[in-house]
Length: 258
Image (tube, rainbow, N blue to C red):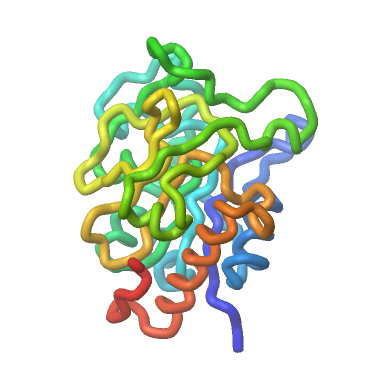
C-alpha cells in the first residue's frame, strides 16, 4: 500500500550563486520517511507553478520547513526594514493560504522555525524582526561557526504548559531543544495557543485552538536527528499518525487532532 504523501515546503536556492533551485533539507525528508512513515515530496513554493488547491488534493499533510528568508512584514501590517531580513513573497503566497485552508479542513501540518512563524502570521499574528535585539532576550540564532552537529546541538530548555498537548506528547513539562532562528512571535494570532517558552520568554511551541486537525508547530528544528532525539521522534511520529488518519478517512476523521 502506498504511503501517504507529505508535501515539504521547499525554499528557493542558488547553486554556485547561479543556478536557481527549489530545495528541501535532506533531514526533513528523512524525518518524514523514517519517523512519520510517509512519502516525502518537496514542493516548489511558487504560485506560478503550483496552487494551494492542487496541493491540498495531492498531499495528505505538509511540513512547513525552516528557511533563511523571512515572512514579509506586510503580511502582518508592518513596513519592511533591513532588520526584517530577506523575504520570500512567493513562499508567503503559498504557505499562508495553505495554513488557513488546512486549519479549516482539518488537514495536518507541522510547522518548523519559519513554518512556525508562518502559522502565527496566517492566523493574524505578528513577528519581532530580531529577537536578540530585545531587552532580556538571548541570541537564538544559529552559531556562525562549527560543524553541523555543533550548530544543531541542543542549547536551551523549553518549558511546556502542564496538561497541554505538548506536555502529553512529550511526557514532560520541560524539554531540551536546539535553536537556529532570528525572528519570533510578537503577538499570537487568533486561536494560536502558545504552550512552550524558552527561558527568556520567547514562544517556542504552538497549536491552533479548536482546529479539527494536527497543527503543532515549533520554533526549533526537530528534523535534526529526528529518529533518535527523545523530543523530535514523538513529534514526527504523532504527525505521521495524523497524516495516515487523513489519508484513510479525510476530513471526517478528527483523530488527527490528538
